[in-house]
Length: 177
Image 1 (cartoon, rainbow, N blue to C red):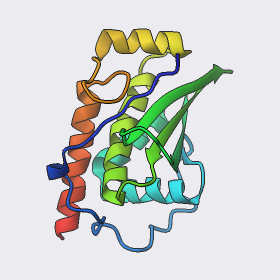
Image 2: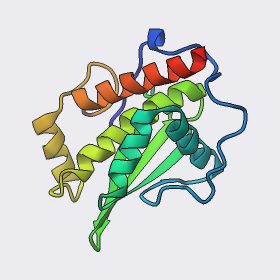
Image 3: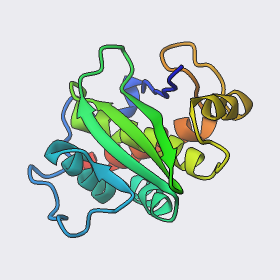
Image 4: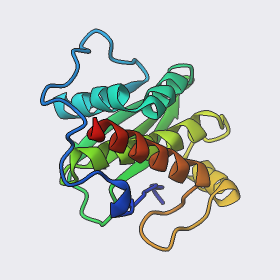
């Protein structure tokens, strides 16, 4: 059974339907893209770059992942369920574990960044747990440390919820400038 994590944020945490906190142009980071956290395409690379530039929490989580055995690929695309994002362990081989984070493309940019921060926290949870090698060990881990949310998703952790809320506050403060 595939595992996915999700978070729906209260609208009150978000600065509005647009993402005014970022410029129209993403930061020039072509040479500064992190190795362990990658955007699957130009849109995802732009999302990761903008999130790192606009949120110290996201930047810290990406830095933590750089020191891990995880390769995290971020995708922005269609998610038919009401969740804003999901994290899945895809494979573990040769001393490297591959994780995919999907972010809902129809969400406003500020919400995409908030959800990315939440999902990156799940990735750091996986990174810190070398026993997680497949969907079975991933589910066992989250049964031990997480809980089932009342809406969407398979499992949740307080740490990922807190990370998402921290990113939402950072995004909101940036929008106010």
